[in-house]
Image (cartoon, rainbow, N blue to C red; front, top):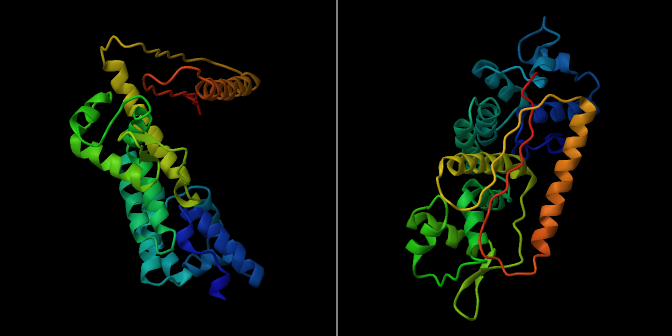
Length: 276
């Protein structure tokens, strides 16, 4: 009956896997409740442990091993699950990135190659920046030093070479008949397994760029505004709608720009709670 159960490699949240596993088992046997699962991992007198886990309670290494036994994982699945728990319980972005790279390496599905491609593209901010830069800068594949120095902040020559190689591999750029590399109309397809995480990593890198922009004394035009506000729930919803409308308007302006591109800009719109 294991073939009817969820596949651990398709998850980037171990709690979601536990919930789906329990539901699948319950469909086969109505006695397979959360309380029964709690008994299987050695807590016969606890009714709330499994519910607490699903609500965010941390899982210790001891109970990770008990979960592994209960799920009857093979060695590869067990290794993936253990890293997945560490990933979900990581305390900072560096730990999350480290464990996510391990998850991709341990993934045993045929989509692993697609996961790696998507993650590599979004992992480093300069991949998207170089792709945009090639719209306004003629690069023939020779002077990587000049290409790397065009970005703010500048990157290294090896980073520029790696970015061009990846963009070519993903068919996001191509060499035109005039000898210059230019973006294609293709877009990268991000699989569900990596979508949320690569977006988070890309946003983190973008915020690091914003910090650099604040400290940069460049005379180039930039607008950086910060407001801390108190607002009602109704007002919050109105602001969220205005942000969505603004983003849509920006996309429309870019799409309908009558003049050829001349430079590259990054836009970050942040609206987040500062009170529990």
